[in-house]
Length: 148
Image (spheres, one colour):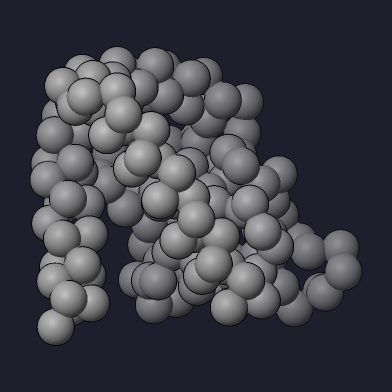
């Protein structure tokens, strides 16, 4: 079952990369899940709480605690959704921008160190193959192509 082996490898690589990046997150007092929430908000101006929880794959009951902690730190804020009075939007604050700039630089440095140990042709092939797979999956799911 080559397909299951691929899934196992994706999972192992992901877990190993997150473990290598964890000290960067921990230095800022953040968990990997909190970083993921902040990263998604950095890419979008604002998102509905339920949409953001769904994109990350976290149950809304768990997600509320994450949003509470990040809001208490001044990194994001909840605002009423102008299109739906029953919904709440979450958006980043100016403090988030500075934090994410610092994190992006540190993460980029660590990832460069990891990926630069691979031969150049392997890195290019890996990037092209992962982009192709992502593009295909987005099309299957009806999402906008190119969105991460």
